[in-house]
Length: 336
Image (cartoon, rainbow, N blue to C red; front, side, top):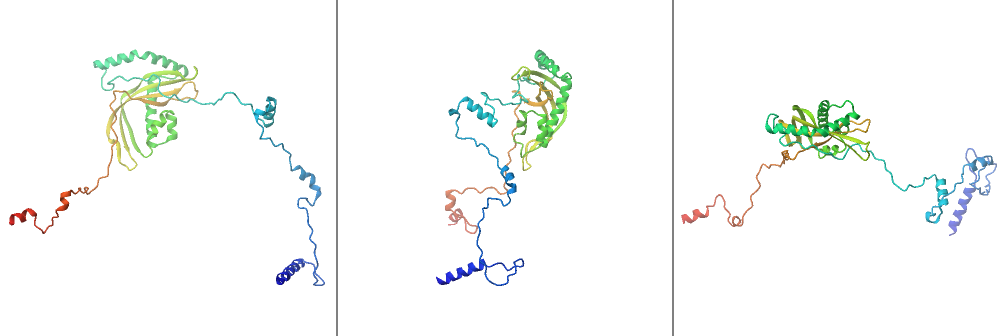
């Protein structure tokens, strides 16, 4: 215990001894100078000239009372608090602005006549179809007149040619999977239907020629929410030859063929927001009639093994074991 006390005193003396560095004053004698510790207030600056500026650093703010409840306050107090905090009074209704760029479907869809594309106009059935189309053209003419009130340059024959170019461009863009450009050609309703289940597919599509010139067969106009918000839909008939081949992610053919040419009869609906000054015609939907033959299903591929699977052994074959050298049971019975 005494050794610890002696060591502590020696350490205190060593700490109290002045420094003997280069900047230390030269001492005449080697006597130890006792130094008294002085405590200073660290929060007080040594220079009082900047006291006023240091005081300006602190701003007194009013801390809001978060425990206040609107039920315990009067209307005047609530109004005062909201003015202090820069808050607007709540509205009794909820308003959310929204933009309708397209309709949700086809209003008054066109019903294609049965056998269209297979019957000539000379035959009896073809002439009957032509006569029925003339009867249904009244509403279409009224709709075309409504479209011309917003778009003076609208002409059905010229629009049919423009719609065919738009139809080809939409399919080529779909094959390229350029989703940003596709949104400019098709509406928001047709976009998810076109992009459905093509993530891992490779599509080869080609438009060869038109068997019949495209023509406008149906036109309708309607208003949404207000009378001034008008949308127009025009149905165009396409009868053409196309090539389609779809491959899966492994490069196996799923549908169609690149060497098989097929005649395609389609009724495509194009829509435009007439009330919008910058509205454009876009592909909206495709009408599939009930008499149209169903599409062929996709090919299902399987893995083919080189060796056939082993046949299951029966209970009788397990009891009898036949070797190459041993004679068969029937032969042994005859020799005996």
